[in-house]
Image (tube, rainbow, N blue to C red; front, top):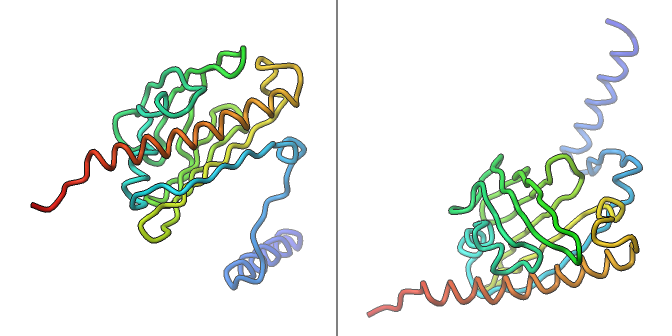
Length: 189
């Protein structure tokens, strides 16, 4: 066996062993585009069990009701999405209209979802953490300012709009999910 290949395999096994033992966190080196991703993170406590909250949040037909940028959706919209599903979103941010196809890149039922924009590094991650009778919901959006020049040529304005809409979205999502869960609650007779 080639000595270089043997060394590479030995190093890989050592890294895998360190990762498995918890002594090393696996990371991939970030490329120049990865380093320039802007992260917008919003959290809220939603009154409901994680699985029920998860099912509503991951049903795309509700997006236009809670996200101020979303004007329409198609694809998988009538049920909670699953790994590999695609959702096409049309919307408006500032003066810029957009259409994006999201693919579910990560799916852990009741805990986490990652939506990856096809052909772009833009991604959205949702996490659901139980807190007694509540679910702590966190939404993280990662994007490149330079990819959103149709919104504004001013990067500060792009970031301001993205942050404002994300904050509004999470507030509206909390209201919508809690309203649906209250309406569906069956009281004992």
